[in-house]
Structures are given as structure tokens and as C-alpha cells.
Length: 311
Image (cartoon, rainbow, N blue to C red):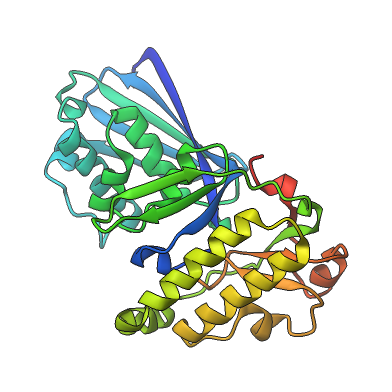
């Protein structure tokens, strides 16, 4: 395989959704934080008219590798049964080509290498960082690319693009509103992120959420108020009260126990679910270092606020 010398590298931040999970889809204000971890994408030219793709995990191991013809992407070839990840990649690139047809009008091909700076199972945005990197490469709108391929609220794309905390909201036409905010409270030494060692199927929670659409207007307003107050909160006690209230609201909507009720009922502190109420990370607020508590229960991945969040 012959390479040409041109190289471009793009990078996107990972994400954590602190407030507004699920309800962000209904217009609630959500607080989201970009992480120090993310994903890069490097593009080199190939003499041959094809796409050679290699994805590396944070330990430099290859977790995905494939080759695509331009025709595969233009015709949106279906690889779903044979290889779901390859199918998803074709879908993203196909939509990217619709937005920028010059992409596959090229006489040369592309050698692509992506590399995560976090373990893929952490759930910090493997897909969103990829979509934002592809959008940068193809010079297309990342939010539109997300809508046409993966779907979702887009808060993760906003985190990929910003180096500080944001309040994210969808307007009445589902267009993103991104407000950069200063979220550096004086109690960050009391905030930790704990990885729960698992992915959980959230289908049941999503179904409950979808069944309650007509009852969510008031809840959406309340969550927006919690988000606004959280950003302004200057003490740990106020923040823990806000996050505990948030957990109760979502527990009621989703008809699920909070993660603290389910896994850590004896913990002296606040535990906040993040994202889709399942596995991945939780946020822990504690006056004392909670590391001994969680390691004693088999949870070894515990990051301080300053280790996780881009500040």
C-alpha cells in the first residue's frame, strides 16, 4: 500500500452529563463537562481510491480495522449483520459525503487512524468524539452529522467542541443552544468519579421515559432550575441537596432505584448517576476521600475531579 505524505490530525473531548439526562431531549437545561480524555483522528492520503481505517484503544491495541471502497460509502452498503461497527462507520461517512460531496470526489484515498485516550468501555464518548472528528475533517456540521447518523440530544458534540463547562439546551425546533459557564466550585476536592465496571441495558428505563411524555413539562422546568442553581452553588451542602433532588425526580420518571439505593445504600455522601442511568461512571460527593469505601466493594477506577474534568 502506497501512502502520500499529507497528514491532518483532529481531536475531540470526551463528555460527562451532570444534569438533565433524558430530559435534555425535552428541552431541559443540562450541565455537561468536557473531560481530559478524548479521541484523535489522523488522516493521510492513499494513492489507491479507498478508505483504510484503524482504531486504537488507549493501550495502543487495535479494536477495529477495516477497508472500505468509495462505492461502499456512496451507496451506503449494508454491513449490519456481518459487522455492526463497520455498518455504523459507513452510515456516518455516507452522511458526511452527502453534506460534503467533495469528500469522495477525490482522486486519492484516505488512511485513517483513530486513537482513544480513555479505555473504550468507560463510556466517555467514543462515538461522539468520532463524529466530531469526522465533521472537522470533512468541514461539515457535527450536530447535523449526529442527527442524520446516530441521533441524540447533541450535548456530547458540544462537549467535544468546548474546553469548559457548558449548559446545553434544545430549543423548540430542536436546535442546540450552548452556553459556556464557569463551573469550578471551591469543593472540587470533594468530587470523585467512580467507574461501575459494567454497561447496563437501559431499554426499560427509556421505555418508561417515552411513556410519560405528557407528564414531563413540569419536571423539565424543575431540572432546568436545578441546573441553573447548581452552576451558581458555592457550597457542598447546597450542591448535594440539588443532586439528591435530581436523582429522586429521575428515579420517579424512570421507575428505577437510584444507584445509591441499588448499590451503595450505606454510603455517607451523595452519588449521582450520569448519562443513561446504567453503567459507566457515577459522580460522588463526599466530605472524606471515598476511595477505601469503593475499593472495598470492588470498584477500582476512582478519579478525582481534577483528573477527569478539563479545567
